[in-house]
Length: 432
Ligand code: 4AD
Ligand code: MG
Image (cartoon, rainbow, N blue to C red; front, side, top):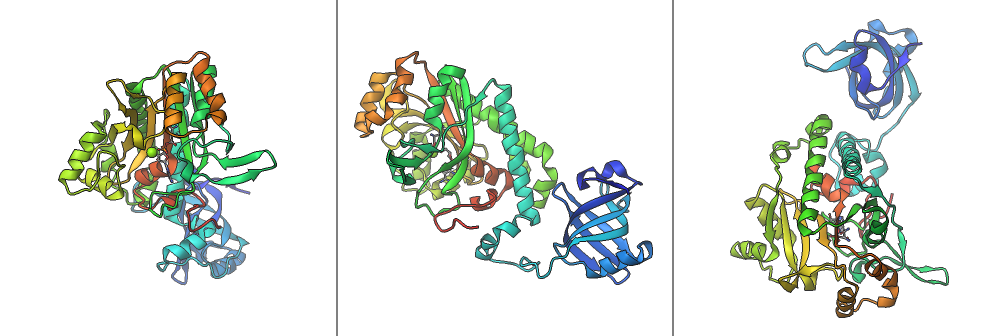
């Protein structure tokens, strides 16, 4: 028996006989020779199966092969005759693990509905594989960065009894006979509590928004990393976000060159990104946008068109800060010189990918927070536990939440966010 290895390790076995196992992602045959593109999740390799090199049983198998059949193949790893750094296998024996007939996804173009209906199979396609690999790198990079910066992971609950963001986008359900339960929109408030135990904390998990948004940037279930830092003020909050984003970009560029190539991503757009990012106030952005025909006002959020306009002007991410308090969450600290504005910052990606991060300094005075809660009609009795963080050892603190799918869209150059999560949930779809 020869050694079974992963395709990603094939180069280490050059000129040796090894066994690979995987699925056939592409196939062409010229009678005497079959060219099999084999994938095993770790990578892709071309297997050249020439009749002359195969035993009788393997020749029969070669004649039966179909797209997405699973096989085990033994042969010699050799350098590709023309392509530098590429390896292929010259097969000596083929074994069928599972034969696939009539694989629904073919080489012809399929519409998005068909592909989403077959998401469980579509995940196997090369581009979809590449996107999930980038997602995996991004997650690992975020967690590594946080670990290196003294953060403790605190898993916040998914079932909650209060709203974190606006109450209009809550998924509600009956929680036994105790009351109404909600699916978490963000773990932020729980992190604010845990911060007094651990200083710097984060969570990373699925969050839910019942918003009726039909845009290419909205999901009803998505993954968010919320971070919360004691003794961080507004400017430090933006700095750490910037460092995090730079670290993730660097990791994806170095670890996912093959994936980015599969996706035909213009990597110069990512490698050209430099910290510090651009910083503009909401009011400055409004002026820039209105000059270019936008109908945005001093009291409204940016629309998709606005994000596009900005990306035509700037090729660097932009922190938009000093937001009108009216259109931001009640827990945000206000600007010391003018309390009608919040010390909030949204980080806009380049190329029209929109808002990646939402964050702010938090109001840390219980009385002031109570006043904002009153103005925002927040039911104080449900938030007593949240107020306790301001009653016992309250400190200045800030935090932010990064949407994983928005980040992966941007890094991968994928326009629709639904391709960046394995099984997307939108207002139209929760299956497969
Ligand atoms: O700006 P948001 O709503 O901020 C919060 O929830 C804060 N509590 C986070 C915090 O400070 N800890 O959401 C944060 C990010 C957005 O910037 C965006 O990237 C993403 O989450 N996001 C969505 N992604 C996909 N689909 C949606 N419907 C999203 N809504 C927000
Ligand atoms: Mg936001």
